[in-house]
Length: 235
Length: 280
Image (tube, rainbow over all chains, first blue to last red):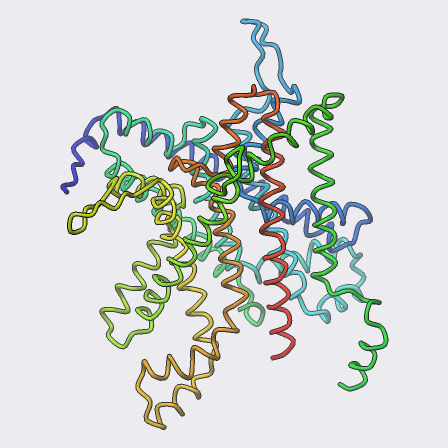
């Protein structure tokens, strides 16, 4: 079996791959930001034991963590269009869904990995010593301020390693965006294979792309974790 | 110690374990949540949607309208079990490679481990789909590679790395004194692994293994790309033939199926982990 990479020289395929990588990166960055917001808000709701919301968050987190992200994506994609969230375009008179495939993928990635992030942040909050919290309270910080200024920063520092794994998992999961016709790198890869039938070589190239993205993300996360570290706290 | 034991005996049900509470919440709450989503989607027509689901659920579970367990959700379960068996063997080999004496073997094994760990599952599945031939002829007998076999191989690639990591974690948790005393007694390295370390490590790595299995089971949903008759492709076929009106209902039902299978495993693994933490 011989590998043939001559198709990589074609400028059309190069543009496709680069455009796909751009979409993937944009999707991942949006999803990671949303994931942090979901994770922190969810962990805060569970930590403060907000009545009713706490139960709901626990249930939603269990649902998100124990079901396939692919099916979650399909549910989001079908449900949102089923609910009739669409606007009529004034120019053409067609119904355009408010949530495009891109938004659906970002939402589903942020929800799935946000469910995991809730657990990570929550265990980080538990690892913050009680004495520190008591000291902050006795200095006159309110509970909310204690949470925002003392507990959360320490919890995030304590949970850099599982959070890095979560981010890498998000990048890997983003490859399923091609299922709802978002033009990410996987989508363009299948397009290329349809044209030149070099299935295995194209998959190798895409694999390299994902490896590079994941390694880059874990390196950056490791650097950030080391730069933010407070001596005496954390591992 | 004895005081707490008696209190536990006197008040057995006063304070539930945290996992049991989460389990009860999840088992009651999630179906209710999905049901609410169904009603929110279909409104008046939710009765029809439920009737349609009831009529089609046998098809989604087994893949065929008649008896037989060759497809649908059963295929997902069989696929995950087969992939787990394969990746247990390969993962053990990889794990032994990462703790080998020879430096070269160690480097190669950890390189493979890192490569496999960073592979998206979808890409592993696609690559296997095109890399594996449709059949192999061994001494004249033709062994066909069905999409099912390809899916199993593709799934077990990334899981191998997870299994090897879980095993290495369990083996490293055994104190080094065990290794040293066994060596002082004249055991060889593979004998120490087999008779001393592995029997102690297996209970330690059970919770992690169960987490890996739950993740693998969730990952079998991606096997839809290989063309097996798993639950998602059956759902797609059904909605294509009956009209896409009930697509959401079918997807919600599939979500519930996956949840009902993998949530008990996740709860059990968390419980085992906590018991182990309390014991140590």
